[in-house]
Length: 354
Image 1 (cartoon, rainbow, N blue to C red):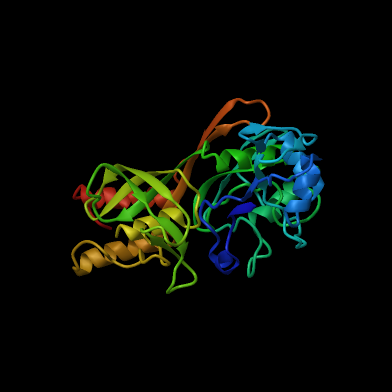
Image 2 (image 1 turned 90 degrees about the vertical axis):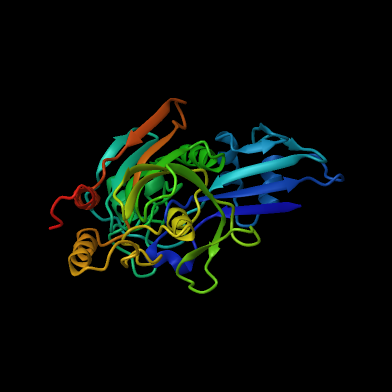
C-alpha cells in the first residue's frame, strides 16, 4: 500500500505565486507479507511512479529513506511487513528556462547552499505569465558552473518558496544531497521560520495559535480557504505574537509549524484580521478606524506606500545539511514595510498623519 503526501504549488495559483510552500514529496509504503527480498532502490523505483533509481539512491545517501523508523542505505533488502517512509526533493519541471543576469542579495553562500533576501515583486520560479525575471532565472546565471543548475530546468535547488509579493529569506540547495536533506528538515518541521506581518485590527490577545486545514477556496479558485473542521485541505498551524499595537492595525510575528500555500494570509483572514494591503484576502480596504476624509486619505497613502500584502520572511533557522552546524539568518524589514510601520506608529502616537 502506498500513501502519498505532496507539498507543491497549484498551477492555477502560479501567477500570484505561493507563500512559504514547501517543495517535496513524501511516500509511505507498507510492505506486503508475501514480499520477496529485494534491494530497496529497485523496490521503490518499481513502486513509485516517475521516480528514477538514481533519485532513490540519492535520497538514501541523504538519509531521507526510513525503514521501520531508521535510515537505511540503498543496498538494504526489503522484507515483509517493513514500513517505508521516503522524502524526496521535488524534481525539476521539464521546461527550458534561460539564465538571466539579475542582481541577487546574497546573505550566505558555501559549497552546499545559498541564502538570498528576495525583494517583493520577484516571482520565485517561472510559470504562466512569468517566464523571465524570476529568482530561478537569476540562480541559473549566478550558479551556472554548479552541476545542479546547468540543466536549464525550472526548480534547481528549491525546497521551499515565498510569494511573489512577500519579501525575505529563502534557502537554495546547490547539491542534490543538500536538497534532499533540507527537504527532510522541512518535512520534519525542524526548520525555524518567522515572518513579520501588519494585520488589520487590534489583536484580542498578545499571542495565540491559528489552527485550520487550508485548501483551495470553493468560491474563488485563485485563493485558499481555511476549513476548521478538517474535512478538506491540509493541516496547518500558525503561531503569532504581537510586536506592536497601533490601534487600527497590529504588527505581529508569525512562527510556522507547517508550510501551506498562502498559510499566513488565509489564516489571518479566517480570524478576521487580514494582512494590510492584501488584495486577494480583503486587506486592501479600510477595515478598521473612522471614516473621516483625513483618515481615509491616510490609509490610501499607506496603501500607495506598500502596494502589496505587508508580509516579510524575517528569519530562517536550520541544520546545515552537510556539516550539521546550526544555522540562523535574519533579514531586516524592507523600506516599504519600514515606512508603513512608521506611519502607523506616528498615527497611534498622535503625530501628524501626512
